[in-house]
Image (tube, rainbow, N blue to C red; front, side, top):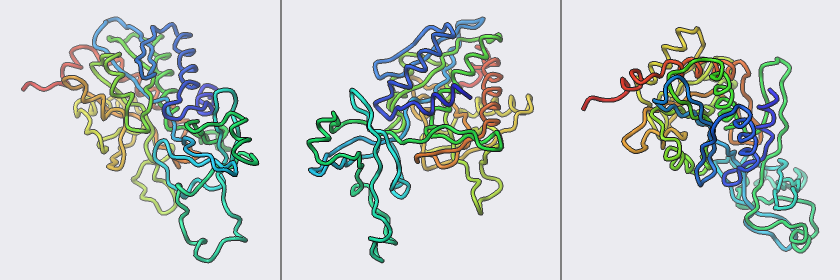
Length: 353
């Protein structure tokens, strides 16, 4: 779990993914992969198997949800806007890192103590536009002297921790450093196994602000089949339905989201492979969000695509939880699926007019 720990603790909100990209570059180069990049910042490693074609894309995304500084008040407080989807209610009193060109600053999203709240304020959801970050500055001049500027990225703080059950992982940015990890680990496993294709594995940028890297990455990687590697939402909290995705239930295969219905033949191959290898899996249907596959499957004349991931609790907040066993099963499943993707199989995903 050391690599996953490093990936989750790296700071990389949308548009500022450099720290995570460097980890990916290091790992891909250590594996001897040929690097494939685009001008947006997405990065992949290419590994040829026994055949040059088809080309199989395995893509997580580098970015995490965060914020950007939009205003510095005369009293030295920082106002901000979200990068990615946030629920205002999870923000107050949370610690954040404000990243400047020269150094990082720890801040806290300010909140009133309960002693000062009126009866009306106690029941009100505080809007994000009124929130601010306190970095301990006395005034705006001190903030500027420290080098903090409008436009600087702001990253949540949460250290990586393995919980007492030795399976539950607690960390920030599992959405989607899990996908980065899955791409790297699958590529590593495939070095030791035959596969009848060329695999291009890595991660895109700016997924959380509109699947932007997913628009350009397919032009650099030219996939015949694409897998978006991302987390889904665990719905195993108190009072939840037992049939919903849960931690420890196995990888998630997405049947529907707001951006894509997967290629059915590819989806069925994934399911058949899971059952063949006795890998537990879960089905995800979510109409309130999407993944990079929503762009991948529309590339050129169309690319058969599917989403493979794991359920995670509390995503799009400062902290999230996922299951180590789900992650391990995801690596096993994805590796087994890639080994089946020869030209004849990939051709069978198409349509005859």
